[in-house]
Image (cartoon, rainbow over all chains, first blue to last red):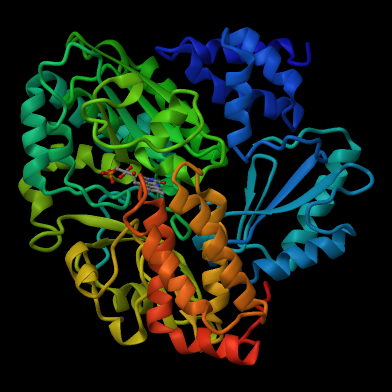
Length: 166
Length: 427
Ligand SMILES: Cc1cc2nc3c(=O)[nH]c(=O)nc-3n(C[C@H](O)[C@H](O)[C@H](O)COP(=O)(O)O)c2cc1C
């Protein structure tokens, strides 16, 4: 099993809240993604077993939802909003700045596996643009100074093996 | 004018706690409804209030609730739509983060009105924090006997569940949302049957936006007449506007419907960022047609914005200044709609892809004569020809831009470059 006991328990506790077990697929994928950072067929198989639905139903749903990476990513997944409100306030320059600071281009992971950088569609933080999401947390009204500080803190956390939680 | 009904306690950091919420009169409406009102009376009250859906379409809330068949033996479901993904829109999140109990209470009252004993709040997956705040609020309500079995000893049971999505704009569309909630891919369904007849798990279902539901307790507490006296003749009450883009003080502002756009932008928003000149405004989220600077005094209500050639939509006002290339704006938007099309209908799936290619090549300086006519024709062939309105949503800003800024697109094709172009720098 890849899913830890805690994750399995959470999936089961969520499952019973629905009139139909299939509804638990998305919550289960979310739990699995939070634990592993990305999804995989092995996880679909485990989820299918827990919820007691065919494997294909889990895989089919998972392939639709872009929020869950399907390949391994760094410890911190940086998702910069590139949609209109953020773009008007310099989201593209924010992405370039991050590319330079991290020494990677959009879509890549740093060699130490700490950061993956991607850009995404609107995250609902339009009035606090520009913004980025790192794992589950939103970072808003970004400035160069703020970005520097955030990256520094996360590097420090990664060195100490701490989790970045909401 | 600014008028805080939904935002009355938005700045109180303790409002998220049930005790504070209750000390501000919270759950009084829920108790009143359970103890002294019949479901039909609640629906009547909502009808009288004139409250219209705040998720985009503006459908009257009370009327929607009344469509639930009275005699159906099936269970009924109430779903709160917290998918909030229309670019520019960031208001539901604020309500869930700062006043989650108002959303819970509104959901509860709506559920009772339609005879539902199970309510879901579908929160977009990226909103981990708002979803956590909703879960906390629901847990607190259960622990006080405000949700669960035999609520306020009325004999009424209500279960409430937060369901998080997986990052798909289409899941804000109500039928795609229902599929997603059932564990399916988030693809829209053909209507009819409408959700009121066959919604979640094939049962009668009402889907309402967060903001629509959050104001329901106040309507019950203060009365339909009170609510109906706010706003204009046909657009009742207040609405939250998410102000973003090239504006000095972006933010979420609650206004009486019918307030002038200029009041929002200048008096509340502080005017244009760095004193630049206004070029265009998207008044109701990225799928609504543009307004021009000479329309800045348009009242923000459903009818006035329609008369001005646009829509109130989700109330997301995006301000664009003179330094901005409109081809670039449209490229951003069509990229979004292409990415978010669920792929079910051919016109939307293929059409958004073709539009992205054509607009992309114009923006890249590789546009050809005739491209604009091709775009016109593709837009015509998407509009109104898809199962859900995502196709329309993709087309409306493009058609509007081609009408209002056609010269700029033509310049791009003729000269292989932007008429104006700024690389916007973040601070
Ligand atoms: C592509 C698309 C996306 C939508 N996204 C949302 C959304 O994020 N939130 C929302 O409340 N309504 C959204 N809607 C509107 C819903 O389909 C539905 O009309 C609304 O939730 C009903 O609630 P209301 O009557 O309270 O406005 C969307 C519609 C479409 C076509």
